[in-house]
Length: 74
Image (tube, rainbow, N blue to C red):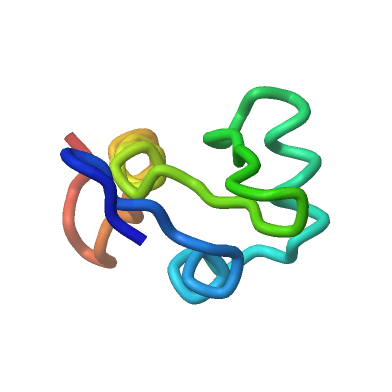
């Protein structure tokens, strides 16, 4: 789904991008730790692709990167 300047993704597309269960995503949305879905119709919800991608980038940036064996941390 695309609107001018926005790309929307449905639940199936989101679950292909994010390796979490629907329940975990819903719980994270409620805690405002994940971009919130919004209703397109009474039976269809969507997420803003850009918000989801920003969430992924923030998670990558915050991740503790493992140090390779034999390489001093620093």
